[in-house]
Image (cartoon, rainbow, N blue to C red; front, side):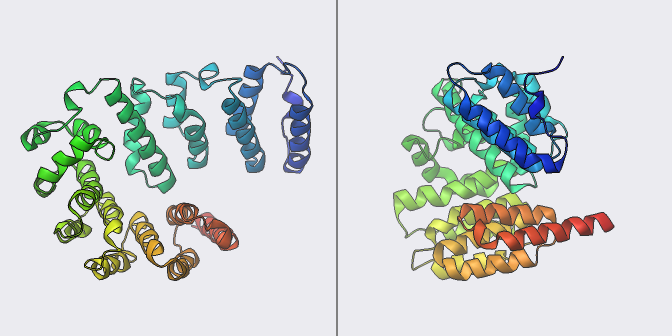
Length: 344
């Protein structure tokens, strides 16, 4: 059956600018209730994911975001847990999954176990944008789970022995509340370094590496041995651990006693074999010397070796709000890499 919105579909690249104008005029001219908002949202959603024209897809994504934001429809009007999980787990490309994550994650609840498990599986994604989006949402879900009492035995301070007996998932859930809950932070100060020395799970270890410098710095000041103890993790085999170690230590980079050591670590990490570690190092350097770091980042753009690395650099430039400075170089790098892939 033909939809009222079929006339707005795009069948060629040349039609995109005209159809965008038609759609904008249609939306702005509506008086009163206008079109069925759910059907309109479903049309935009389908076009966002199925259109082969990126400009059109992005425009539909933007309009759908506005509709969801103003409350005329909700994600639940065209998604349930299983259908969203199917879209995320399926063969959608990273850009499509990022659009889904942006539009739908506020709707996801801790009890949506299939989606929760997918989010957990993606915190080690090779795409830095996916990693960042999933980690942020997992932190929110874990905090909500705590507030709802679902982790009732894990809400406050813990003894070292209790923490070490917990499953990795429970450890991560407990650690997610360290920055917001004073009693958890105080527990971590007491035995965190001991746990760091023996923890085997790479996800728990990387979370500890990021949190320990923060809680020690806030509660004990700068005169501690934490940077010296944690920086050994820069030799860890797992890139997540190395990257999170840098992220944790950047807070100490302004301290006279540790500045040279930590900036030296960041300089060395620019040669790391993993792009997420290199971009993390560049971000740390940017926080201390933005002009020099931007020069280094520009060199990274010019020398980028693969699309994964390009995505990491793009994420880095977005995080320091400097993407527009190098937009032409980013686009040239993408064209070059896609051409190399086509030949290989």
